[in-house]
Image (tube, rainbow, N blue to C red; front, side, top):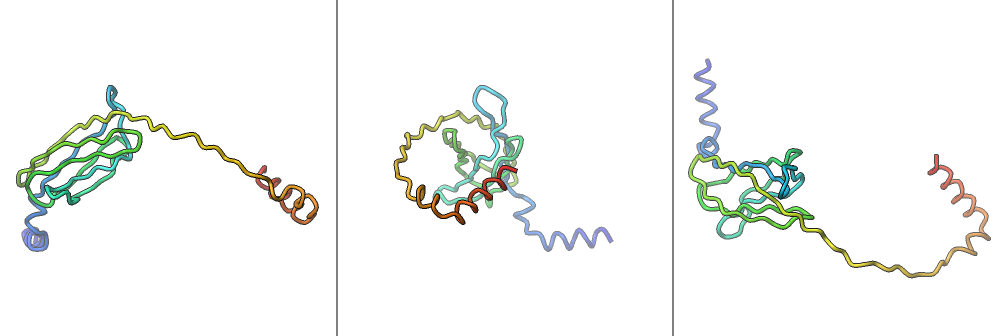
Amino acid sequence: MKALGLACLLVLVPIGVLNAQVVRGRLVEAGTDVAVVGALVLLQDSAGKRAAQAVSGSEGRFSLRAPAPGAYLLRILRIGYLPVDSTVRLMEGETLTRTMVLAGAPVALPEITVAGTATCGERARRDTLSAALWTNAGTALAI
């Protein structure tokens, strides 16, 4: 009975899936062993087309399955870090394991100045229904 189940599985599962090429690894901050969580990890073919993608997990780990053997660009993108690119060559059925180090890149945003004029101050004070409504809304939010 087990042999029949295995035979059915082999018929249903394409051979390429059994011999898949995999790149897995861990992302860490430069100079530490702190995991980089939530980074976009891309595997791109020689034409720049996305072959696989993943997001690094809670321990900075990722796993990508390449559709075919060959050369790929492994690209790591995360806000607050410099992009990291690495070329990988995958043979049929091969699993590569990599630890990728990301260097922080502080993002400096320009100062924002807001200017305006109050348009509802006096008018709102004269409208007792609006004033009561805003007072009650503020009370509800304070609770």
